[in-house]
Length: 217
Length: 217
DNA sequence: GTATGTGAAGTTATTCACAGCG
DNA sequence: CGCTGTGAATAACTTCACATAC
Image 1 (cartoon, chains in turn cyan, purple, yellow, green):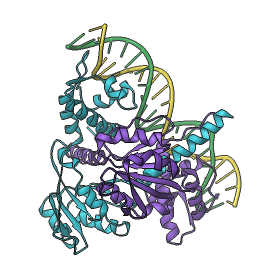
Image 2 (cartoon, each protein chain N blue to C red; image 1 turned 180 degrees about the vertical axis):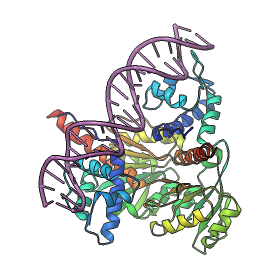
Image 3 (cartoon, protein in one colour; image 1 turned 90 degrees about the vertical axis):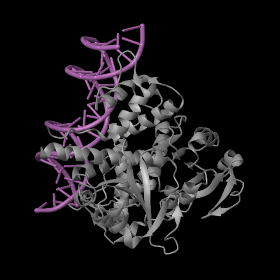
Image 4 (spheres, each protein chain N blue to C red; image 1 turned 135 degrees about the vertical axis):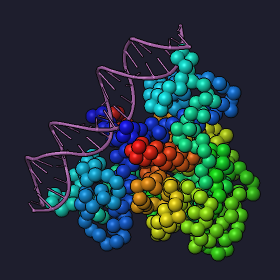
């Protein structure tokens, strides 16, 4: 059996479903239908059912989905049932903000180290982790068995830093620098480009205006 | 003429092309072919040509695209040829990091205000902007004609804050809180969920492992 | 009755392949 | 001759609609 291929868009929605289910769970709700889940986001009920059914039969016909059960299933599918040792590389303003970001532990991401070049920051404790010198990157990554890296260094050194992360045995990199990273196929990269996100907004706003002008003319 | 509809995925790639072209420009390159542009990202040449051709005929047959010319065209398409007055709402660690993010000005985003509830932060200057009290949100937004908001407040108050931004006349919101915001159709929302991004990575890593196991058995 | 799971249909996006232009 | 721009073909994704199970 050759590897089945799951649509990226479906996988992105799984995270969104999980967020909604966590909210429902906190509110004491125990069961939810595809339609209820759908109307909390801007998708159709069939979409929700199809997305979930891609990975198994989780629902009860005539009833819906069990909230707690589905949370566990989604975590299992997304891989966050297990804990992921994560490092923040670059302790500038953004890196420091991420180190203090409270949601990570409860979502399966365990911060275990930070790195920076600035001697003044070495040895500092931020949140629960220590800031190590950048020289020790490979060594600490390997020794602590870190699997995920959050890359928050200047764009100019992003690629060389990524290369060292790969050498240290990292499996995934979330890159905040505005650079398309090159990495071997077995290391996954997720590009988080804040400027690009803003550009999507300005595109939509600009073209919305055009549409209005067109339809009213 | 009813509004043409552009694929989201194409628009996302336009931002990526723009980043590459900016790099080429800085390196002194004046012309680039769709193939050259394509191999710097993981897309095909036809994809690049189709994406660009959606918005006009920018290339020179037999030659390629003019780098400077295409940069101007993409900025025009994305709406960043003009400057966008932008506010950061919530001056916690993340908000402060974004206020100091140096790329915004050169990309068309002009930070003009920040807001926070903490009295200790009011009146502070961060980067080039002043921190205003949250009570003055609508007033300052409207007076300064702010069009974009970067929302970096706790999830619990994200929706109510978004409502006030809408009341103040904002046109787009980039939301860092893990909450699907409700907003009227003329206000665009872009959801930036860092945890979800990490989950995409863990999904890929987990399923990669499965694939290897399957294909080697 | 109610809501899932899923073939089939419909829609949208990507890739192919080549005519046409510089 | 090289590279764009684009119809036509293909592939991917979404929605419909209903048999099926509770």
